[in-house]
Image (cartoon, rainbow, N blue to C red; front, side, top):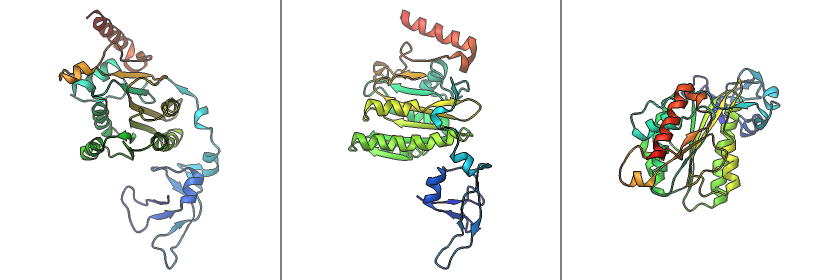
Length: 288
């Protein structure tokens, strides 16, 4: 749809400038972009001035931005900037220690029904919501009405898009892909986007893999982190957080399956000593 250029962000004012839906689509604008261009005064039937054309986006010529390298062709690397969750929640503390997540991580939170996947994702959202420089988006796909209500009541992050329990697999997939596409544009322009998806279970496997595959840390650029719940790993994750329903159902926390959880190249996020500590913890868990 259409939008506005805020003159004094983030507050709205009568001096804000209207920008048409056609301009937003053509320039692939997303919330937070800084744009410039000539403005015309409002006509008699209009309330706001209008942007005639988009000359620059985030300081670059609009044509250069539009013709930039395709997102999938941007060079990427394994995540090396860890998210510090700073939470006293035992499950989040265990994730931070045993399955660290960084900017650009590709994460699934896995486990059978009633293992606490949605609750873990909601707590992660709360921990990430207070961090500066992150564009955080929550997508609910195939969610129960009670889960949708819980996300809305929590207040930390309001879902940006929702496809409920009765939605078809196609509708759920389209809902997820729209939010991922927006996050890709943010990352391509140097921002740090995080998309939380609950869940991937109701979409076809190829749609789940495509959504998860979008996550990456762009070399000398932005990042797109995707954290999604799923009964089983999708494939291609850089981090898997596996929850143990036997622990969750008996209120024993943290509820991580230490052996099944883990992060690729953890030394890039926690250093060699941290990676060694993770390996030792996994070895001890295997001996139990």
